[in-house]
Length: 170
Length: 160
Image (cartoon, rainbow over all chains, first blue to last red; front, side):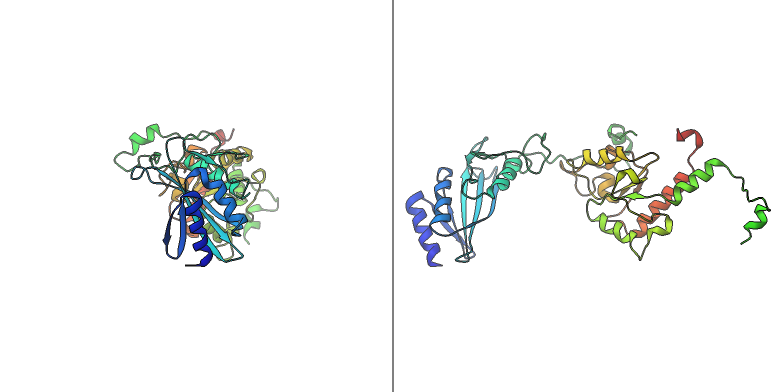
């Protein structure tokens, strides 16, 4: 393991009480959502991680509690290193601090997360939907979101479905 | 050519207006680009030199709905795209036709979910459905020729 990564991991354990793990030579830290802003600032200012390459989320419902993990991936162009941070989030109205003040490109990532998972980012300047239409209800990437399956027309049920299919008029 | 004998020396041909108008409509039917997914690639290749849709009077794919007669919906239509598609359809001048190209545009295809419109006929009236995933350029051209047959059969009283 890289020396700098080792330093970051011990610092994160000391300051934020982070759980650390390594997967395929990439190290990650699991921290709680109160610590994400100081952790991101430390990564950017002290350890020269000048790029937020990714911010996404995973929904582990119903297998795991807390159900959401927000996943950050920071990159240091100076040291050619990647460092991951995971933030578990609980509850039905999950909310956490926005990273826009630290990394400006978090803006659209967080809009997408709000759109797809319904995770609220406090302090975000413009938290609108990014992908779905603005009047959409629900957050489609949640595991408990219905898939919206429509019954398929076959020969045996063609007429029955044809009756209630909404055809457009001229 | 032989046509002179039929004309006599008068330079006049008599024919049914219905047939002449319908014939002229099929000879210069300009499609509007509506490439939404992989079907658009087949639509482009149907337009390009090898298949050459301009043999059938489709010299130009117009990017503007105001200059086109036919909308080829090529690809899956997402729920966010649906109002835009309907708006472009409304901007096309009459007479206008719609070809739904491929399985996704016709019935949702493999995307049976909340994000994709299950058949573009929920938004605009469709004249011809072309099956295939994606349909080959020959299939699209067959669809267009079938549309020509349909247009040639249109009646005076229905023009309105």
